[in-house]
Length: 294
Image (cartoon, rainbow, N blue to C red):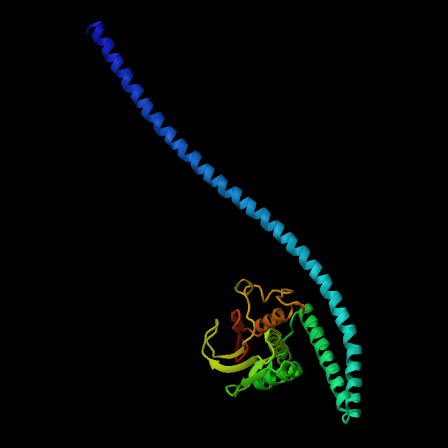
């Protein structure tokens, strides 16, 4: 083999090895590039998870601080409520005695009725405070739900009459006893009625309907359905998701606890409450309750 031929052969071999090395290097580069990209993606995911963890820790810390403040406020509110309830009971007793002695004096009898309305309003506010500051303790027994709803409306009768509200009940479907906590539901229904009264104009309409349904709310047994309709001002769409939050209110007055207490009471009965509303047309709260407690 000539020297020239040997040089060509060596050159070809060098080129072949160079091409092989280049191909291997390119494959290694692509592999490394893929690994780097994967590491970057994993790093981004971990960084995002870390950020979310930090934010979650901050949120939990703020929530814990808020809960501590609420607990302190709740304890103070409960003490004040108990201290107010005793003299309020005495005032109610004396007003009752006065009303018997002034039955023939129509002007003074009207004044006494106004005082009674004020006492009822204070007692209602105190009851809400005590219910909110303490976890609902249920005392389930068989009761007449129709009677409970009727009693709730009687507590609000003065306000209904003052605003000349057209109030109707359709409760004939409630023919069988229901297992529930009578006091807790009475307060919840009263809150719903008073909430409707606040939203209603003078001579507005409030309707309560009860029915039986086989709607399954994570249960197989039939439900009792109670609906509270009013043709009041309605609730803005952006507020619907917040109305059951404690201290949230769209009114100029009120504590914002009424609907939060209603929801707590219904949940304590393993029930569900829903709301639909149209601004300018009215609102409907629908309460689903099991006939028997699990």
